[in-house]
Picture (cartoon, rainbow, N blue to C red):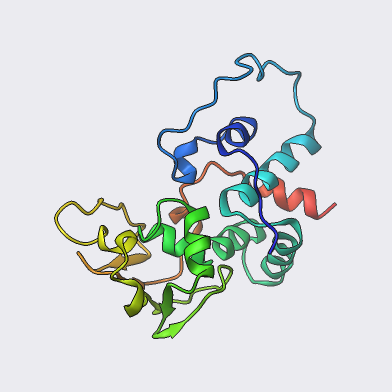
Amino acid sequence: MAKNMQPIAKRCRALGISPATMGYAKKTSNRNPGGQMRKKKSEYALQLTEKQKVKFIYGIMEKQFHSYYEKAASMPGKTGDNLLVLVERRLDNVVFRLGFAMTRREARQLTTHGHFTVNGQRVDIPSYLVKAGDVIEVKESSRSSVKFKRLTGEDAPSVLLPKWLEREKNTLKGTVVQLPTREDIDLPIEEHLIVELYSK
């Protein structure tokens, strides 16, 4: 499986994203402090940056991202909105949004290792697209691990859930109440630029 191994803080800086968006609260990069003083970007560079931003945030490689775009373009509604909703529905992203992992990278790894079930069936494909009504749970045999034990109990970290997801308090179970909409995706992305890039 292809992996993006680029340094998080450096890449966030290059793309103009806050590391907090990626789930990293303490990462910063102090190298090349004047690095942003570059000449005005061309239209193509702006479009490319937006595409790279989405791919980096969600951890998707080019081939898969292009297939998401084609699927989004064939769906009714705005292609850009459809594209973001599709990547938001990925199982690894849902695991991250439910607070079962600290970052999307960690969520992808935990999913690949088979720690989650969807509607009672074990799913180890990070790109699996959830549907409204799906119930995502930490697998019974994984619940005793230190990683998941700390998510329940008194000192469990609090998670701000998007309105399309629900998680029962102090449990390792979440539900997709409805499919996300563009308004539910709180990322600094101008998706119309990605559509322009691909439709050339």
